[in-house]
Image 1: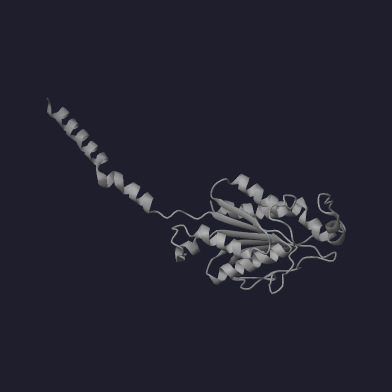
Image 2 (image 1 turned 90 degrees about the vertical axis):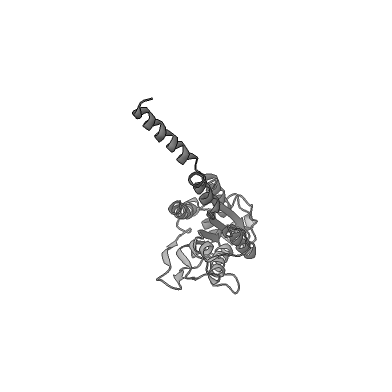
Length: 246
């Protein structure tokens, strides 16, 4: 056997030893197994009034359904009645606790990617939930309010400093109408995207699928709830935030 062939065989054997080395092959597996999985993007919506969380004629429910279908993985979406804020808080903490040790680390809190939205009392509940999360040092990417009506002992006008961005859609006609303006508790930390007014006296919307008493006594408040243009904007704002986290 010539010296050139012997050198090639030695080099080949050395390469086999390196590729089979436990330190080499096991290092990647250890790193992968030790890595803490990322929490999903969390989107929580609240319906207004006494609407059920699964009432599919309502736009807040439809938005969640669209989002879940568009993002079958890496996204946790839920719609709740506006008196179930405690349940929403528990679900958020469960999803953020990626190491399942029963408490949130500083890193788990920092990595939170939460979006909250709602209509009427549901919008008020979304802001109040954001405030609850802020007390625990948990950031919120976005809140969206649609014809927000403040619930007793809640403040839906001031967006807490743990919220990065907030938007408000409202109308001012009828017996029930939304908050005209939201503002940041700390403008250095929260950007108010806008307060957007809709006028349904000038541009009425038909909501034939809604109960007759809603269409009579809360006409314009219901019109903004079933206005597809408004909810396309809501969904677009949420989608933009989801995309920025990918």
